[in-house]
Length: 337
Image (cartoon, rainbow, N blue to C red; front, side):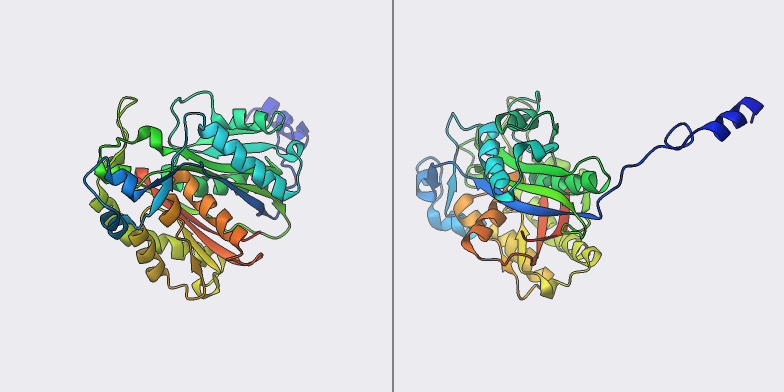
């Protein structure tokens, strides 16, 4: 080391070349409120049976879906995200100017830019926040929630609006029985804030890129395609251990859970995961029956509706479990607002 470099190090003030200044960070993050939005149009199994070779009994036996919501031409990802985000913001008690980061989890965008998050923020009256979209497919909301919690605990944000919003119907081949019976549209949102005590546990996340070709949209001229049996086997074998690890890392026993909210992919998958977790006192989300598979929107949409109905108590722990294309997965325990 030269004499000059020694002098530079000796004279560097705190926060200068001798080290970066780190802001005071929050001890944790918690969710203040949820919000949701679903399109008005209900598509029943009987309606789908008029287009493809299927019927209500077959669909219910395979995926557990009775009906799903499909967005109209005027209901894009932004419009649905604004509705769900506005509802969550109103329930949080915060003003738009209190939000300093907006994250939209989506995998069904028609255009890759600009991001939906910046437009959503503008329409909600949120001025100049950090804003970006996140694509982890059906695990997207859990990824976004983990990112929001980390941003708050790291001092980069104080209040974060997290939204999962999907218009899967624009990527569906309505003559393909394997996909048109499953996917649907909607949005769910949560407002996350700094907290002295944590209300969002550590996120346990990962992916299996070796199986990424099992759920794909190949290009802008293609529809969603999936190998249902391969995905079923992977989800029913690989996801429960991830969920249990999230419980362990949060210090919450499965028996203490008030709710288990898996991604609403398939009712048989949901039931299989719930059996392996063994949470005897938990309400298991089954929003898929009436809402279909809304990908990255499904977890906040399902939990928001559970809270509205009074199915789960405020302050109790809930386990969120996302999994889907990529194959990406994530889980965390949260405190119900």
